[in-house]
Length: 142
Ligand SMILES: [Zn+2]
Image 1: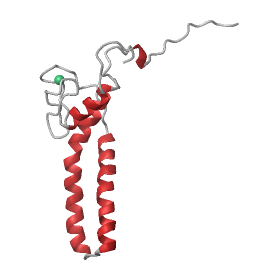
Image 2 (image 1 turned 45 degrees about the vertical axis):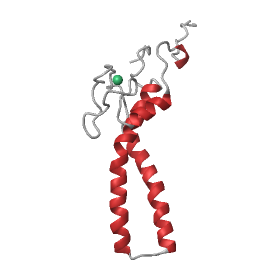
Image 3 (image 1 turned 90 degrees about the vertical axis):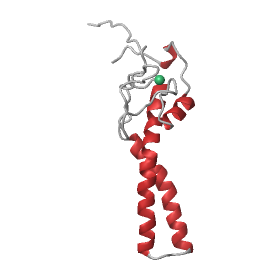
Image 4 (image 1 turned 120 degrees about the horizontal axis):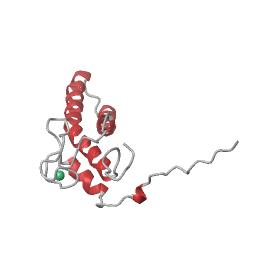
């Protein structure tokens, strides 16, 4: 016996109607810790705590799913700054190990802490611009 089922409806981005969202603009606003939609409201209520909504335009931030991506990106960025610097200084000057550690460890810590919030803001901005997760009000799926 053969059963006939209706074809499943597939949701795609092409069916999206509504406001245009520029990825670069949202990324830059997120880097500055601002709302990806209006660019005026604050994105964070604490160092790495994303606020519930924008205080200016009311955009709901709760659908963001930044998870561990900002930390991975910061590791990649800081690694590409610190490791070549260590190799260059070691091969050309080879200073003492205590001197090197007293420079590289604080530098790595400071760079990582300085980049975490902007990178997380950029990730949330890109997620909003690409209508990822719950940032698309037209997506019928939860
Ligand atoms: Zn806003």
